[in-house]
Length: 252
Image 1 (cartoon, rainbow, N blue to C red):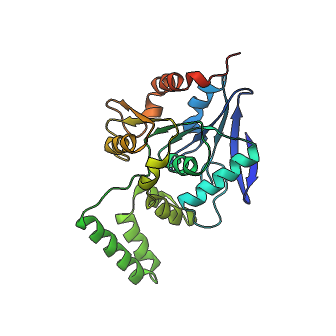
Image 2: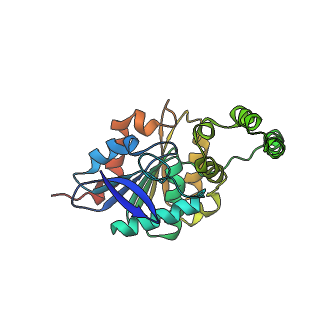
Image 3: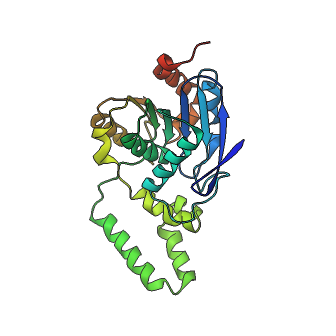
């Protein structure tokens, strides 16, 4: 394990391999390097692989203020600069895909693999917005009464929101409201999308939408699996990676 200071935040990361193109692994919300380790171990003989904890997760520092996806993307760019990584291959899961997509929109990326990719917002009906506006109004009214506010949050908040604390709760709100839909058409990097057929967190329909919008994307579906298909079927996922990245392998 190594640590690096980026924008005043201590970041935990692991480096695997000594030769080849740089691959950067980008975990999902509430996760850490452990979830991506099987990918790093599989690729390390042919790539230089970086597996890190985003700020606020694992052994990395929490941000000092609530981060948006744009903030995470800027931090990630500085992280790569500190490591001397240019034109990397990005492999992301869920929240990590949000950052990968926004990074690829502004910076050179060799290829991307996005699994269970978040970032395409749902178009909700009136009942959803009524619930949100009711919560916001109640939050304002109950702000002097922290006990009642906590009870309200526990009823209407997601599990991720309830498990987060302090600045990370505010960060989560910013993250889930980010929508990358409008920039997908401008991302020309060759992209492999991997979705679980029964993913409820980021439904397969979002993967199909991304495949349609991105000029150079292809979708692979893991039948009968969920949001963590890449982890549940690690061997299969690694074989798909091998086929997609074969031309970039450093053979020695």
